[in-house]
Length: 218
DNA sequence: TCATTAACACGGG
DNA sequence: CCCGTGTTAATGA
Image (tube, rainbow, N blue to C red; front, side, top):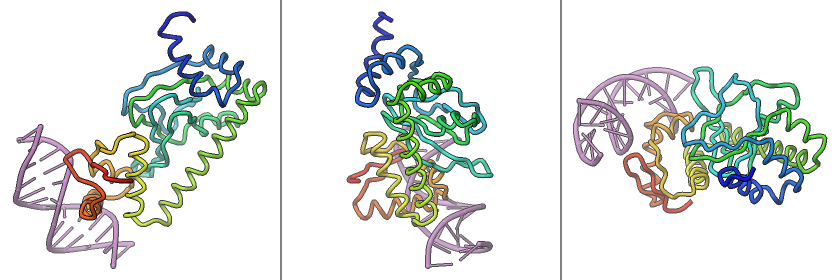
């Protein structure tokens, strides 16, 4: 691998994961991993689809959703740079069908590691198995937070959490979205989102525009 | 009481 | 004109 185009993502991978994986494993990742640049809004994985690779995020963000019986999406959490998807690790335990939908939230750069290769690394690289376990734990905690939000938080609170999450994930105070999209993510109606956003605007926390919400603080 | 559904007017692109 | 937005009235949980 000496061409500039292939070494560039190798460098990204090394800088992103150098503190996490040892050098030998980093070399294996650049050898066996497939690099992908994915534009915003791409569905990387859907419910029932086979999970044949483990994603390692370099740049960007991925929205992880579950579907209700009507096929409506419920937001679970976001994957960010340096994250992986614990559910794809489930393939280690025999499951191979995805139970979630994953859509890129912004332009994203990631490495896909074939499941079989990842399984070998579980035995040979302690830094890999530690990473998988840590990823499992952090994904589990995020899911528990999502459950808490759905079960115990009122809508105004959930909306504020959602907005601050989006700002963090997008790295931009101005969110380019519609009230309807927010309503879909929070699993409620647009009427409610419009009213709550209007309240927040009156409180001076944000400014509303067409197709955009400009946050003042978060 | 609060969310949802339907309906409507307004306005910017 | 089309679509996103803001609002209201009726209905339901």
